[in-house]
Image (cartoon, rainbow, N blue to C red; front, side, top):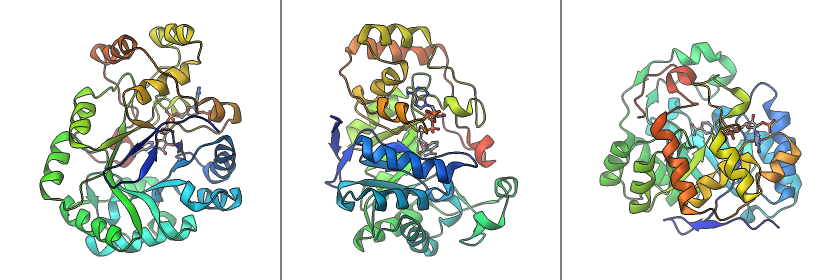
Length: 314
Ligand SMILES: NC(=O)c1ccc[n+]([C@@H]2O[C@H](COP(=O)([O-])OP(=O)(O)OC[C@H]3O[C@@H](n4cnc5c(N)ncnc54)[C@H](OP(=O)(O)O)[C@@H]3O)[C@@H](O)[C@H]2O)c1
């Protein structure tokens, strides 16, 4: 079994620092089913999905067929923006549980820090992406949604709760009001978006970060935001040579060595395997990589392009 580090969340649960990402395109469910099945066989024990990815069923099927005990697998899924009203939160989670074929999730995240109008729990079947992008923003305070998330923990439906795409001011506000502090904040993190302030702040507050698009989302380059070319970046290539690793492994271990989780997505068996590797990097190399984002800061996932909603993430 791969030697993958874990950290203890503020909820007391263990969190494997390499997870398998499952956001994809039109062929996603079949690819995700096969990919997740292979990833579990290769040793991954942390799977990241979301209601809106429409890959929860595929993940659930792969987990069931793996024969691995449920308690040995850490499942993260996410609450969609149109289900932020407190009265919708439990039903939304129950739909995810049904899709996943489980009676609890390890981690439930508020996917984006703003709410949009409710269009029914079956809105994904009834609307196009363009129609969804036109959904109106509504005013549901984050704390109201969070209180409903806290109830899910009390009911044993969710083990840990957290957020995604949250900035320091949003976390500050949530921490000042929450009864249960967020265990995790999942945000875009890679050399061109190193977010050192957020990494420092999260350490101080005991919130574990998960870095999404840790490879810069090369498969969909520029589709949801700016183009990011990290796998051929000269410093990354130089460090790959120094450590005798692949560029992708350097990018992932940049995150692991900074103490946060990474959730690379791949549909390719050899890359699924090679992404599950941890090695120690020298601090001076980590610092040199962090310096890359002083030259340019690039975001692969821009909420205006993905969701059609203005939201200041910097
Ligand atoms: N919370 C949020 O708002 C949010 C937003 C975006 C993503 N996420 C989560 O984060 C996960 C990862 O992000 P992502 O999928 O956007 O980006 P990513 O993991 O940075 O990149 C995935 C792409 O990289 C390729 N790849 C994987 N391993 C590689 C390697 N070792 N060398 C070269 N190429 C490699 C994959 O192609 P192949 O399949 O051909 O290997 C795939 O096209 C998602 O799947 C999702 O679970 C969350």
